[in-house]
Image (cartoon, rainbow, N blue to C red; front, side):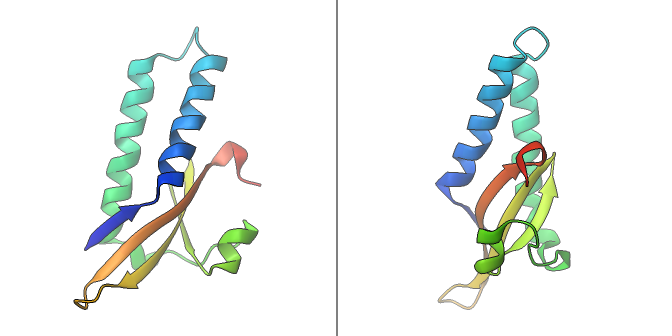
Length: 104
């Protein structure tokens, strides 16, 4: 199963951690952020093993309107949908992301 991550997702992750580094520069290192990001992307890749267990998004209006599903990894909420490729195989598209601290 193929996983596609939209550019907006990468931007949301990078923006959050850049802001965190700027705000907590005395207590948060770049190494720590890189480890967090690696775990985050590993979690996204593992979604292909259990994507069917998650429910439809219920808090963010855009996600609800698009009928996307939601999962949480490393304090990030991700919106995704499962589509079928032309060859009949499933594909997961990660559409959006927001950190738990910003999820309202």
